[in-house]
Length: 206
Image (tube, rainbow, N blue to C red; front, side):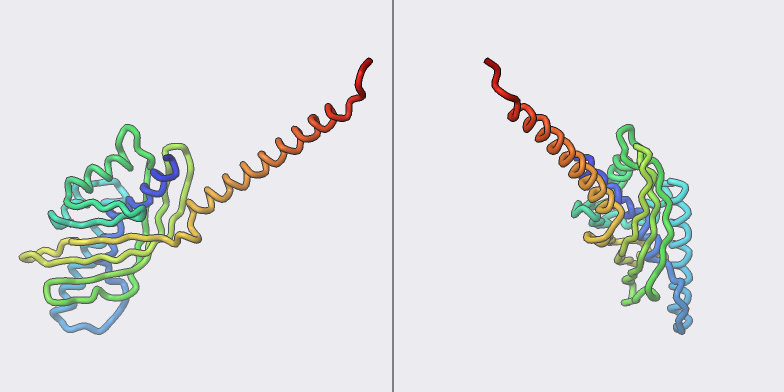
């Protein structure tokens, strides 16, 4: 159960990765109209990144579409701002939350692909989690984000986050724990076998 929640907490990047969806850090030649749009998306990126790192949930939600769809790393799907607020408070800030603090640094692979009033962005993130039990985790993730323009405002409409299931901080932690348990079990088995063997070799008494 703890491991499942730990995997789930990594999905907190729903509030962080959309930040990078607006990030436009890769230089490129663009038409003047598109450049204005990219500048606006850069501003969204910076605002959301700052809000995440100071745990300002209201500011983060202000950049999300009312019907936003977020797919977490553990295959959970949250739809709408209320569902995302509940998820955030469950994982970070609630009385039984797993995460004590999270900070993130986001990078984009390229300029947001623009299709009229729709944009698609993708990139990577490096996220530092401080868990309630004192554990520190650094997670390297990949993300894809879809934005839509309503009036003069760009909003996050969909976001998907993932990490390498074969090589990540959580998997390393689980492997280490499993190895430690395996060694302990082997030692116990050897000790038990030694004493059982000695008992079996005791000479019979008259």
